[in-house]
Length: 162
Image (cartoon, rainbow, N blue to C red; front, top):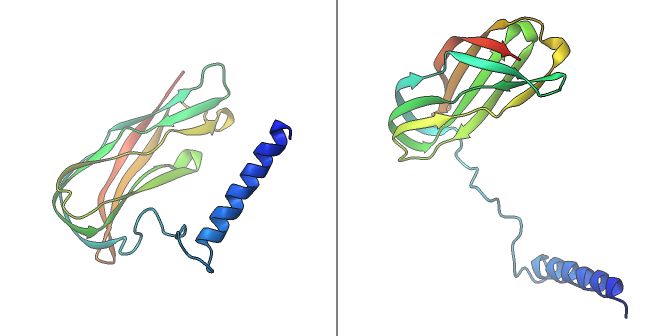
């Protein structure tokens, strides 16, 4: 036999074997289990004593590009107590550009002290960016005990560079 045919046959045999072993007839392996237990998210209790949020975010022009990259420094919150699995959404909004984005962070009981929250870098097209500076808003929203609590809502300067 030639080598490509052997590789295809082995791959097909492996897929068939895993399917049979994890299927309802044998059930030897359960491949449907989530990697993270999603039950109870947003439940629990948390006490936030302080929040430190950046005063400036930047829109950096890409190298030889028609795009800008939004860079949002991390925010931090000090948790005096934390139980269950509350969540925190860290968001940025730039009304003049019609832009908003948020990232949800999952917490677990026992994590007291400072916790840092981030938003991944994002791309904006050049034609939407026309000023040197914009006004924005940063928010941190805690979801615990079935309720949403705004723990930070503040103005931020959006500086355009490049």
